[in-house]
Length: 255
Image (cartoon, rainbow, N blue to C red; front, side):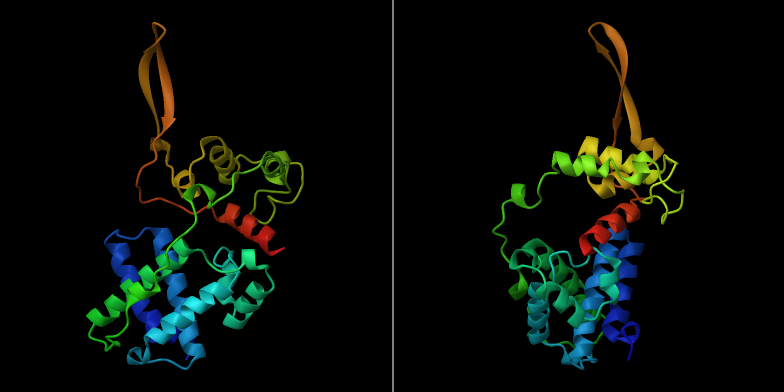
């Protein structure tokens, strides 16, 4: 049986489509559910589990152990979706302890999504172990919000703005914009990076903007009528992922 044929993956795609149609999950959530569902199915295949009724609390515990064994960077690279579990474990084992194991918030999100997939499976009449308790898998975060992600240093920012797509690259194509050359193209990567740095907004917020999200208000300042422009971040259907930025960061992290 291939991974795509595993019943858990098949039913997970059903719940993804259901929530996508209802606009309950955006593109990012759909991708995250697909990623964790396929990872869990890989673990089930590794243990020879195919039938829903053979899934038990133990397998959730094994998944939790896997979360503790992989690198903190797991999931950022598209290559992780094609690596075997042994390869993921090996990458994690090669990292120092401080760079190994997913953080509590990520683990809780994964189990929350899995819980929704399991509920969907049960709602379709499939037998599941009634003793499965997703609440047992939740972790308590001891990390302060302000320390979860370090601030970008001046040196880091300088390095970004010295990349080829700012100083001159080989061409327009995605595989050329990080290669030094004579051209500077004002494409999405150029403007998104600038806006991320100067606004402090999230990647999905910037890359999901449309022209109509740049608004203005007329106001009187010091007795003069002035037009002030601002960015309006809102829920929209065009939230796009910054694929090029992510691929660059992931490539740097894997090098």
